[in-house]
Amino acid sequence: MAIQGGLPVEFGTVFPNGAYALSVEAITDFETKRPQLDKNTGLPLWAVDVIDADPEARGKAKSVKVKVAAEHCPTLPDEVPGLPFRPVEFESMTVVPYVDDSGRRPRVAYSLRARGVKTPGGNGAASRKAPAAAGAGAGASGGKDAG
Image 1 (cartoon, rainbow, N blue to C red):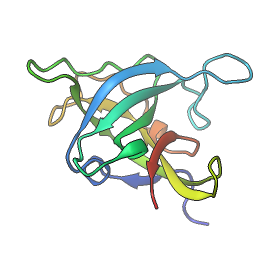
Image 2 (cartoon, rainbow, N blue to C red; image 1 turned 90 degrees about the vertical axis):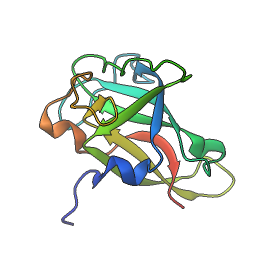
Image 3 (tube, helix red, strand yellow; image 1 turned 180 degrees about the vertical axis):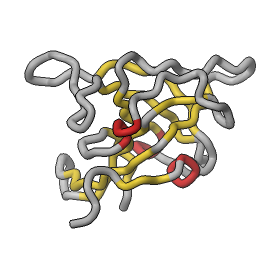
């Protein structure tokens, strides 16, 4: 198969109404209790908790996690006065579809990855980005429901 790893997708396709970051934390391997590493780059993985600004989003689709592979914890954009959350944009996003069979019946879901975090419309200076290969690969986390 020609497609390997995640499927490239534009930020605006995933979050057409924008997104807000709540927090970022290291992802630890459940069994070893060590930082989980990206399979392609060997860099630590970080989970950014995000609220989708889409007014139509409901339930689990309203809050998602985007995984970022980076040597250091990604820096979230500065707070904006008058807003309860930090507006955020992700660079070089990929999506990985998978079958979620944790409920009563299996469903298609997808997980999200990005190479970096930045201020919307910004140049990425607020982020710590991983090397170019970090956005590729499977095994992301998310919960955005693809169908």
